[in-house]
Amino acid sequence: MSRFRLQPSPAQEQALAEHCGHARFVWNLAVEQHAHWKPGRTSAPGFAEQCRQLTEARAEFEWLRGGSIIVQQQALKDFHQAMANFFGKTHRRPTWRKRGQGEGFRIVAVKPGDVRRLSRNVGEVKIPKVGWVRLRWSRPIPEGVKSYRVTRDRAGRWHVAFTAIPEPVPAPGSGEVVGVDRGVAVSAALSTGELLNAPTLRDTEKERLLTLQRKLARAQRGSNRRSKVKAAIAKLKAREADRRKDWVEKTSTDLARRFDVIAVEDLKIANMTRSAKGTLEAPGRNIRQKAGLNRGILAAGWGQLVARLEQKAPGRVQKIDPRYTSQTCNTCKHLARESRESQALFLCVACGHRANADVNAAKNVRDTAAGHAVAARGGSGFPEPANREPQRDLLLMG
Ligand SMILES: [Zn+2]
Image (cartoon, rainbow, N blue to C red; front, side, top):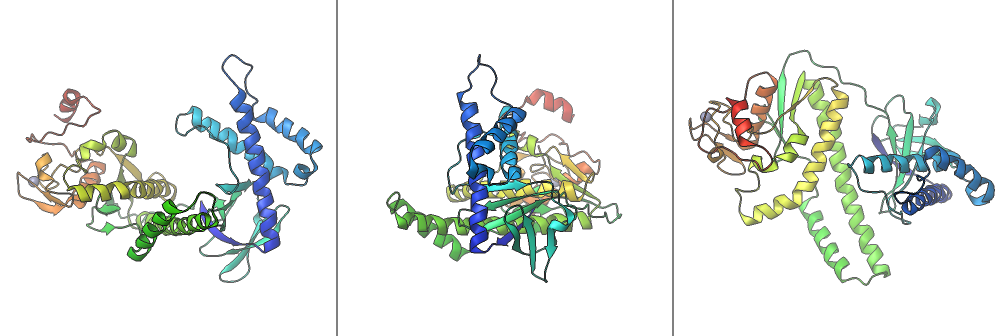
């Protein structure tokens, strides 16, 4: 998905807001229908039934009929996807949407001519019932766009995100494998020794955010001042998210272009055994708090990076069991929790090998992908993650 800033005229902005209103209305109707459903009753209406009801509602209400059927149908489709995610236990139950929160709509059946470039930095997209809306051509728009989503963020900015799976990046054919470890101190460490940092807010921006958050706490509910402060906070957060997305795009392309195989830790296993990494145990209180603050942001960036890599380097991304990668010496393969001197430093208690802790882990990730076992030979500090059976793992490692 690639996101571009829309620059609608005031009249277009109104038309876009109307689409958002229709999408919200239809979504909320669906939420309401499903809220009344209880076990034992006849089942809540499915997508086809709701589409039929939508047709009826359009016949009845002129204001709804005036809107785009695509926008309204897609809102239903989004709702059913959200319900599927809820039943699949990956997301929470879809809830009522309020005006001004997460506003947006989806357009499908996009034709090749519906997106065009006007000049170096300007393009436009054809939106049903709105017409051609200008957009900032900040990066190439992928070929073969099939659908897009228009959103209005909390700062009042409009964006369009085109859905097209990015073109795979050709492999270099060098046979080279890179290990990428999700760092604690940095966003990602490569087995080449490179440390990558997803951009966050600058110090002055962070200070400003803190000031704004304090102001928000003091501002009266429903006051003008409060909504202004809220908008300013949203703007800063949106800026941070933009920078992170940009970083993810550049980093994933770079890795896909430079290496044949990209080995990353398997997030599912990592999340299960987070404690195994021993990450948040070593540092002092202050660092721990900071890590807590940054964790969510880092985790979000990491998830995006892996997802992008799998699209740009299909079949070339290997997911590695991350257990022990941070506590095993890459040089002598000795496994010991004590070797993790600190958050940043790995100092092998057996051979004295000294390295950046995240780079040492990235090398273990790389070696595992390349077929070398990153298993331990003994070691006193046998790690004991909460969610597994040590005995079984002992056997596996032997
Ligand atoms: Zn060693």
